[in-house]
Image (cartoon, rainbow, N blue to C red; front, side):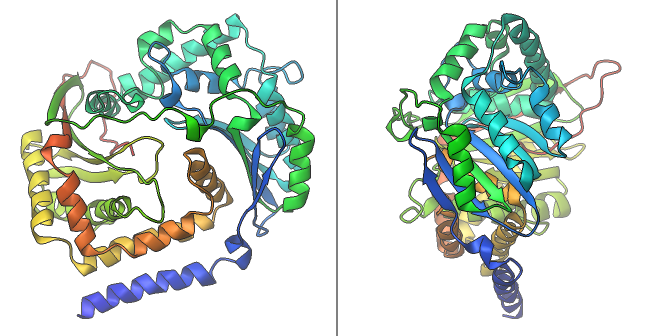
Length: 463
């Protein structure tokens, strides 16, 4: 009883921190506007420092690619820095840096986004530059060929030469039978080698339009003034015919009909294990409950130093050097629940797999304790507090939700539903989804390291 009281006290203390340590302005609903050309603008005022983040999201990621052109979303992200007639190649980032700002971009399975973080007085500059390349990008074969060499080298460094990343990539390709999530965001090497400038131009013309974009502005700004700036810089860009996100064809993964296994051979010091179970992602923030329970299941297994996998496999039995769990509650497509680990020296991946399975069976059989669940909930609240502390994290949260078909209004409901998860629900989703028929197991069979090749250092799981 004493321990439960302490955990409950910690949980509610974090809730109190959420209300006390952050100013009321952060809790005010963001301001939403829609330009006539279909560009959605979401402004969230945060006046704690004279800084602003401008983040534009295009609702197009690797999920929208076709076979033979994998990696084109990411390739175009690179090309977006190659210049327009108004702003020559390389000048975009130089102009942002010249006023003390920083900029970058990222591509995921579900979206592509570009951001600038700078002093509030330079927000017009960020909008001017970003709106210009929304429709005025200049693509040349020479620059495209150069950049594709950069992308291919990026693939070699981040995937082909990283055993854990390679195992994860191949596991995904096997786990999904038909869904586009089976393809890597960076693309297959053969597709990259045969990519044409026309592929990039077609992708740009198809998806880079105001009616397929969300502009998120967070920081020390006035919402109405920001709306006027958006109209000034983006308002004249014409909408383009495209299929809205909510009208695109559903891509449903067929049910898996039995366990899948694969072995990946790559130079490495230690073996590695990844286990992936098909699981649902959040679709209805109010009615769904299983994704919230799966999120808590992840926290029980791997949310802190005292979580089950670390406690049982690393500290007690010492069968693993590392062991973790992963689950993404939000995605345009289906999600997966992952378990992974590196066995200790002298132990095998088979022994590690058996140990992980034993922990899962124990959880399904005995359930989780209120202490474990309270600790996992405290972690969720703490994460929410820390996220509100960063204007960039706030912008990321808004953009991610909007880009996958949810709403910037949802975080409070999501947090409320997570707090309402019961121990019985966590046990229920473990029993339902952590089953062999929906499982793919990938193992790394370490091969001798080449001379002068850096030793592989276990880098954890790619969430």
